[in-house]
Image (tube, rainbow, N blue to C red; front, side):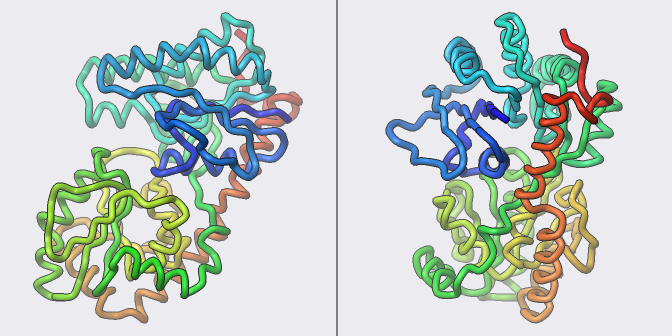
Length: 387
């Protein structure tokens, strides 16, 4: 089966959560797979091991400039879709759905006959409602409704998101959860972990937060950790260090280690090099890839209930749930002071994620339902009528 994955953001090489989703779906889909992405990078981006990469160069601006630049690339994107002529076209849902709704309309006008799968990463309207104005939220809701009711197949990352889609738009979805490349986190030699510690000057007892630092829910989490939690942690545990990767922070603290954005090959040993991992997420939707990657590395995770939303874990065994400043201070100090407890919790987490969230298994499920669309067997209840 020939599949084209369309990403209106840079997915290879992956440097953020959304990119990791798209990259791993593309990597583990079998058959003849293409990934078309918008990218700002010049020159050769490398040769992915299991799919063909199609780069559309773009300059990303902010506001109206971004909208104009993306729309200006539509003719080139559509021409490439026509040339590749895929049987299945997967629209990756980490961009504003307004673009995808219009791209799908244009594809219909051009008589592109591929089966359309909208692989959502979250409920975009709820995310925009939290961080944007009324106009952006309204346009997003209209676009998401049109897209969900015109794609042949819609996926949701969790039962929570699927319920939101049904309540908001009357759209039926299948669950394709976010996952983690468990192979990449397995069997990392201690010598490599040691080199990463030395390279990034990791010292003391370390608590990791990972995620793009300019993303709203992550920014909120970092403000919470830096301003309210870690000063109190350091008062109790003077050698404790907060480690933040995913961007440069303007804040400088003696207990803060901030290497910025890491090469994606350094991320697994870096996570393994830290003692515990944190996810104080209070807003947003979808499932948090950072938590799955923490778990795959065998790390004890402290998260809010919102952060762990949509992930099948048992609090107190696979993950530690905390909500308030005092909860986080207490649990961080407890795990840093008790490495045996931290290792035990991390081991349970690793076993859980290997059983439920391997990208290899998740991509196989997506491939099965996509093949059903093409072959017309077993997917009648999910496919949309031809328009």
